[in-house]
Image (cartoon, rainbow, N blue to C red; front, side):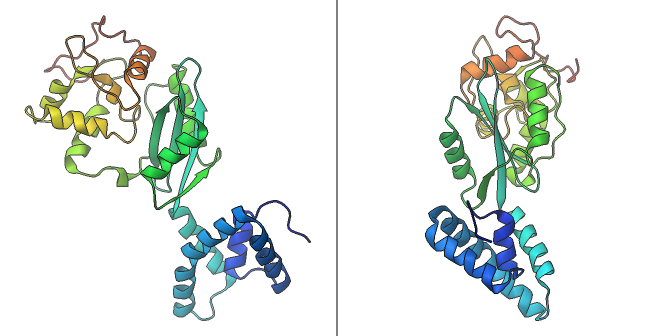
Length: 263
């Protein structure tokens, strides 16, 4: 049977796992020599798998192709970032991405598909970027529900590798306590985490927020009518507040410093 189109992930794994007969393997090699995209993917797989296969065979010379396949699939998944892009009417496009551990990126803005991909590659230079509606289906659904005002809280695992310091963890956890449709100032957030003099550090932590909306940094404002920064721009920050029913600065939904985070 002749190979048509590009090689699939399953075909490449079967090749490296040793599940193909010699004739089929030669067909794959011939295809790779004549297809630049598949040649690049083949090289990536070979880099990912060569050391692992050698280690598996050294540990068990009689290891079966099925066990090698299982190990290769697991290794591949740990080196992939899956993403998809939502196009939200009257808002902007939103990229959501996840690793095998959980949600890994939320990027908003009027970017082209290429620009979204390039930004994601900068965030994860050592991982393989893969567009997948299936792998991101749960995240897509919850974001769509949020933007259509059908969801106020998210139930998605977060990749723990995103949290780089104890301080960042404190700030991000405090963000998740701010109720939907309310806002506080940077200074109030600093006081809430017990670091009243760390307003600027709080601002930097929010600027590096890897998952806006999930960690709702749009609910933190500069105060006195000033909106403050936002990774996707002030216009989108205002729109997110408006989705939640806040028309800043003409709103009475600012939380009192000493009141609990409750509706």
